[in-house]
Image (cartoon, rainbow, N blue to C red; front, side, top):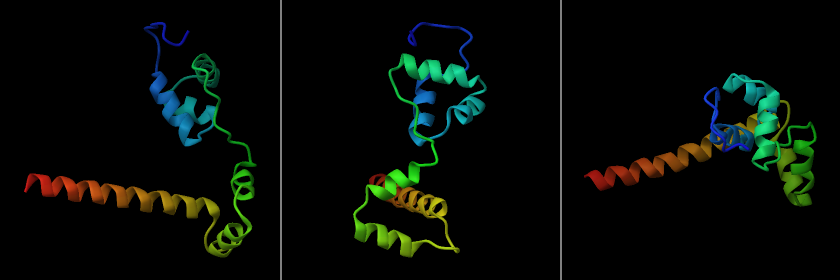
Length: 112
């Protein structure tokens, strides 16, 4: 169903899959891709991909899957000065910079 060519398609399956994997809501994906949320739902269903879990229990599911010492450690990292959202964002940015710095260093040595 999703492989059928439609000239009026505003977005690709790959775009929908990538944004869904990031954990964005169907409404947010639709807004970003300038289409209706139902379109996103139908395309994911046709691709046999479940929509990302964007319920409020997301962090509870993550937290409860951690061992007790890990939970305690995380609690000690957070507080009024930093939310879990900010903490996760900082981790992702740090990982991105580390990976891209390594890639850039390797590319620089190849061109030298």
